[in-house]
Image (cartoon, rainbow, N blue to C red; front, top):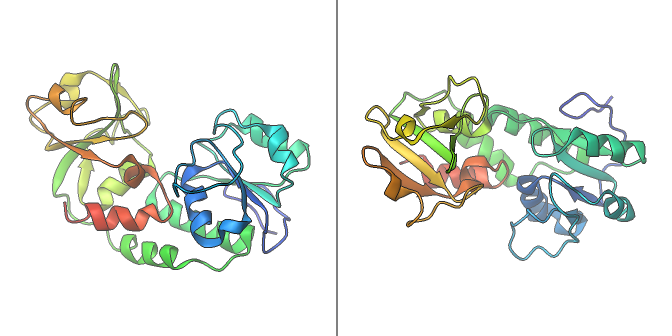
Length: 248
């Protein structure tokens, strides 16, 4: 029996021809492969920039009535990004939902394989094959110690059991907060701006760090502005992330 990442049985048609995505990174993937099949997306689905699919509000407050009206073959959701309550309500209304669960790069690759093979019934795309070739090697030696900020006032960073943290490690970067009890711990600036951290990554999402907002706070530690999409999105962005960050 086919099942999603959480083990929920799935009996949708293959190939799926009407798909609603509640996960921005997966929206980008589906649009790259079969844009005509993507009949709904969230307001946060910003890639590709010219996507003209109907919008169904946000990841945390999707318009369930609008989703049902689109009559999708399946709705793609994610355990972290979407609420279990919304998934349950859609299923109770007879809508098929495929939930992904991703906390590491290998999980992302396996989850996407499963989605394409068992959920969508689509051929695995070239970008997914390349992503596995790029990221599937042995864990590299640590070359630098980094922190990845996600917010300021209060400062928050990437902690334990996250896709971003695993991606950093596979680039040869040790996450200074990998042993945190929280996935996204709140910290003091002094906890990040310290001598034993080589670099602080300042992404443009969820907080939009800029040249004038972020780097000026640091005295001891070097900073680097990066695309948040490359750090957090699994899909075609995984290939871009390797090309952009692996040599850094």
